[in-house]
Length: 213
Length: 230
Length: 194
Image: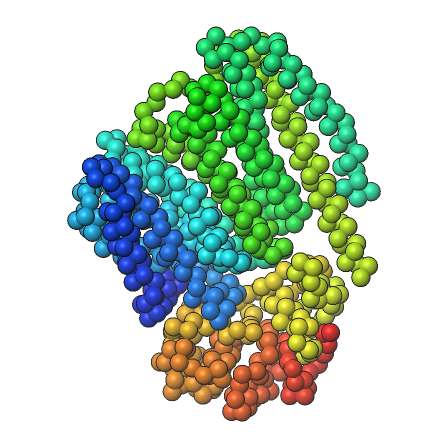
């Protein structure tokens, strides 16, 4: 199916560009590790594990924002986004390619961050990690779209966090709940619902964000 | 006759009706409805707080509907209608937060509590729709801004139920529920007062929506005339 | 092939285009001239469908697959090589016999030797040539070229002129330029913006 081929070509392109430029992924890695160290000093003596899980999610959200802020930068150099939009492929394929690539980077950053978290703070069980993975999908799906929206205007670095954080609240609830609640399945279901609804919405509406007519 | 002129003609009637209904609602809420046994006089804020909250939802829904029409039909007139609806929704949302805080202070002695799902939801939405205005402010007028705003408005209305679910779930580990929920059992008179109030606030919101929309359209018509004359 | 009536474009208070009427039949060659800031780029972007006009109607009888656009910017990825860039767009445009076509274009525009270097290492002239390859890759019926001669060196200009000579009359072409004398001989229509 040519749609799948388009998405594959676009995702491959994004991965290749990042591997060559090598600026976003290392920054995300360093940022998340540095944040965890700051949290150690921010948490007072005797704080329970639960506070640590909360801070983990703050770290995840802000690391993701760092990555998302740079997601469309290659498309804005030399005006490439126009080239993609003019191509006969479905515009939603552009979004999907970008989302999958951003997801790959976020997962790569977390592959370091989560073991570091376990090492510094508290253990993570299966449901906690499932929560992280599910939330990642939601973060990248919505974040790619919002990043494209913000990139078209002024003050794009300021705008993306403002647009994104209210939408991230259900994800944080789901993620933290999956980590600390005995009834973790409900929180995972919330994340699945969020992902399903917002991924479809982002997929369908991306076309309108990058075109004018 | 232009849209703006004909809109203003029907508005005075609607505005008078809204004013009248609001007056009736105040009368019923403050004087006619029986006083609540538990909470006393502070409970009367319920008659204004909940209708304002419901009206805010209504405005956000209207904004999202207009946004959908914009994307679907491609007619840029819907952009202004969506924006004004969301603007009204944000105003009523702020009023919800304010009246909610007053009620919380009067009932429980604190200005804010994370226990009230309603208030937490509105805070989230308030942040979301403030970001909506930041988005509009950062984009130049035109198709790009109209479309992005419309998409964001749709995200907002979808966020409402999902946030509500999330906040309900979050009760488990954020705070144990120690306060009783809002929405007392209503007797007949209370129910009537509530309904009148709800109708009045909704109509008021609609009138304000029409007034603001007409005003903004006049402004834009005027600007176009000026441009054409240059 | 193109029918534009009363095209106007405003950015806030600033009016960039006023009341443009253009009609183009297949095979014609339109030159768009005007000083800097007269709206040439904006007009071409409207023709390509990237920008919506504030007023006016536009009818273009080709879809995206048949449109080749060269913008003010090269529209190629800095971090990818020429081959990788053209391969990506070749896939997106479903170009048949993709590899052969890419090889042929790179050769035509003198980029074959630099095909595996990243665009970030290219000179402005080479980047512009690659941008032209990208615009021509899928053999479009309608070409919209925004100041294609700019940034090209002498050799690049000759390559472009040779290409235009072959395509004129066969494809429908819209070119904006600072230097109309260069493409005057192909022109079937002129639009002067102020």
